[in-house]
Length: 489
Image (cartoon, rainbow, N blue to C red; front, side, top):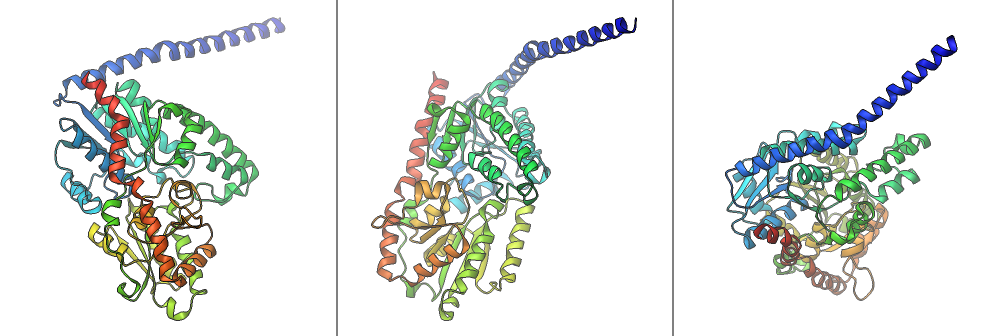
């Protein structure tokens, strides 16, 4: 009897389990498609009811007022579209709630020298905090990616565009805008959310800003994080490949995107726009015209991956290499911008670190300076410094080279693959990895004969034309032209 009851319970349990599985399958294959169709029709109706009847291009860039290299790409793309398609209406989804449209456009002209005038509308998003890394002390990549869907849903509810272009790399929004919003989807990806290099760091248990010490030192936590990253990479590859046109900014990014997204036939490498035409026309000042100082310039937002501490360590090492009379002339100028409160704290931490190294007399911080002052700093400087590991491209590197600086960049990522050439006869800069190596190269440049320095500067200036605004605009318009041609047809 007991055996019979036991068997009956097992049969009932199996039946319940089978019923649950069937319900889940019905939910996935029947209810979800129906929900998708309903939502698609809802947003299609919203599109037909909007006041703008012309083609609308929506740019998803929640930090459009940050003033970094990614923002330069955004405004160059908008400028290119407005020039070729004057009847197109441009919408920018931004989370810069404290900035009025006129303020944003004025800053764009001041920082990037782009004058954006007509047919542009800002859609202000209130959920930007959900893509902030500070919101997710654990599972940061997953949290930010899910947060981007929540932010993207707010954007789609606020305004339904015809063409959706993401210029910040929020790949998890692509299925949302393509399958639910019914939009044509394109992306300009600066940096993959996850890369094979990150997986390699975790596998080798290397400490970095994406792999904390407590995890790197523990083999079990490292193994768990490796599994988590591989699962995330699989999902990231699927959502990223939903974009119909994929633009990447460098060979390094292209290699990683092709590895993870697996759609090389619709992936296009388009170098970001750099102000080389204006910068290469600047006169090169002689050493005695540079205010009797040796100025070393860094142009980078105060973000953790930019690795400002390495710059300060390199300058600290330089002090022990050069003579005292030369050291007194050395000035490190850190030019950048802060996106948020965390960046403000990071910049103040760098100021404290410079005092800790007794460098406060030799280091200057310049925040959000106007374009005219940036040009002046570039003209007066001798060396350009860049320390980010696996920088996706490096617009500031190109701009420094165009202005006549001798650049030392990190021997990785885009700078190594696309920009810096170190072979004799065609050398246009230097590559380094550690603080001591940076310091040694800086001392070498300072002690070089002026003719040897000018030879590198001349080659550097001649090598940057392929990164011009004109080349970017031509390649960008050529790549996205099918969207506009199909719309007109």
